[in-house]
Image (cartoon, rainbow, N blue to C red; front, side, top):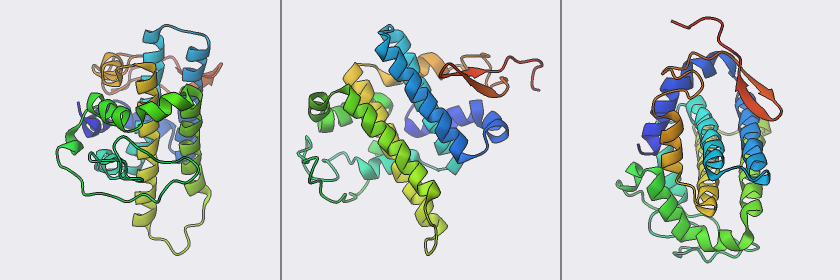
Length: 238
């Protein structure tokens, strides 16, 4: 599946639950942070690569809950704007030659239709070519810092003033920031040598991994010991 097909697929699995149980953007952002912390715990405790891949897939799935929240017709559109196929959108080089302390302003490039259809394997190859070497030099912890920073940027938009701004502009800003979150998830996958497409298929292709249904029949989520857990189903949802 390509990036947008995953959006439709996960919305079909969890869209009804999310619209009832976690209605606010701040709740979804909070659960995304919990999922990132669960991934960090898995790495710190030296869990198997399979378990780390599963945890990373959970992070991506919660990011898609944000995509579904805003009803973006194409989150791939924003990824392509931020990370064009030709070169880095900041320095115009491939691989990127940006200086962290003196980064140029981002310049959107024309979107190539083929890039809109990329799956996560293709995005990993692209972002690995652009930023893999520099990310490896800075280390995995730096990529996690950047991921948390991008999530914080979403909170910053949420808490900011909307005076003088149109809904379309704010909606677009959210799209660009969520694209950055997805890009750093992919960056972590590259550094950990995790096949993100394979991890997502393994966990979500057939439906919810907890109840095995599509749409999901689980009840409300709870957080126990920094793990997102389903409340046991007492009755089946029709």
